[in-house]
Length: 149
Image 1 (cartoon, rainbow, N blue to C red):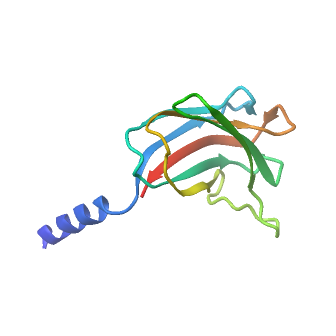
Image 2 (cartoon, rainbow, N blue to C red):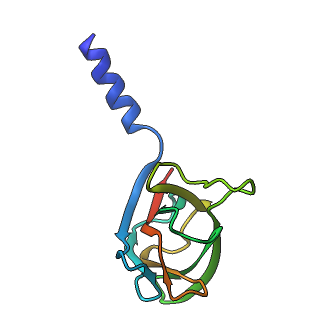
């Protein structure tokens, strides 16, 4: 019986998607400012892998908006950079928070799915808040995860 349990644990933990990387930053109590960005550098050794990219937000009800705008910069191995601005919905149309939790809500947002890197090499992804307010209260942590399928 113990053998079957060990086999099942090894089998189920080795199959399926795995995190290529997962990074988080804690936002200061004073709030998320423009200069407090999450920056992740990583190497892609080959271009055959298929990935999903997730953004994780931990926030409280002290955050006063329905959505959060973030600016995402991706720096490629040849140093070309692309910028995207993404709106993340935090409150459902019926007025309920979309995140799960009690005092701190956590929400994972799929930013990109089933993609491959075109070039091998070193990449950097930076995520910064991009709202009209210079200091956002209620955002606790910001995370970025690259999941290899």
